[in-house]
Image (cartoon, rainbow, N blue to C red; front, side, top):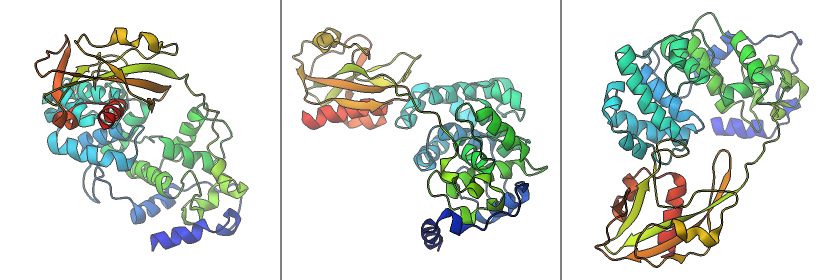
Length: 374
């Protein structure tokens, strides 16, 4: 039935969908949103059931995972983490490399390192209990303004409004905020805070998130079903899809590099660990060159692992896009005998065990490119 409703709504023009609001002075009523949330709240693996007290550890874990990640992508990682490390004390006992392995594929790997550091801080400073105070939460590793507000509101019902991308979109449309992101963020946060009800801060925060994730979508929002459609300035104007305004995105400059896939005769591949600080810190990789704008492919083999091997260049390149720049990697492959020792700071890993390694997506692309063409 929900699908049929959406299809009908999608086929209607914005003007035809919703009666024109009665007066410009209409103000969004938090009670209307909460009533909608009580009927339509999403069932999420980290969300407490009705009448159940939220677990701060699970709220925090989910919010860290959901940074720059969709609910669909984060859900299986969350399930794996809570099954393996069900409490913050259990997470503290984990080895960082094991956490990175479990995180592999989720991206933005600094989050995983901060996850471990934050767990240690909570155990050491707060005896394993997350603080409810916003300032104390912000002081923990990996927790910024949004995550602090989300944990405080959802886990402890502290009067705070976390503003993520979904909430930004809802508020920008409600008030037709003309300022462009990211410059509009302070204004949007102020407007969002003005909507906070006197009670049910946690439910209100999740209601805003749900509204943005379901009805107030980036394209073709289902305005007819929105509990705030009579007080949405963007809807009255007839252009809700144009909000929030966004400044033109500047693409980072393309970088280049080379990756070396050494395959041993006993079905093993040579891997090493990246430095703990910096991009993809402490993750596992195949040996390679630095990534640079002025990379010289003709001198790439100078950076190859110190092995008695004949390297051959594979056709094509591996492409990957990071947050701030795109990357192209040329891949070289070499086969070496079974008894070949690993160079310093590298190790041989069975191909059958690669799934359990802390390999970021770009390295999995490199290995796929090499093994499929080998």
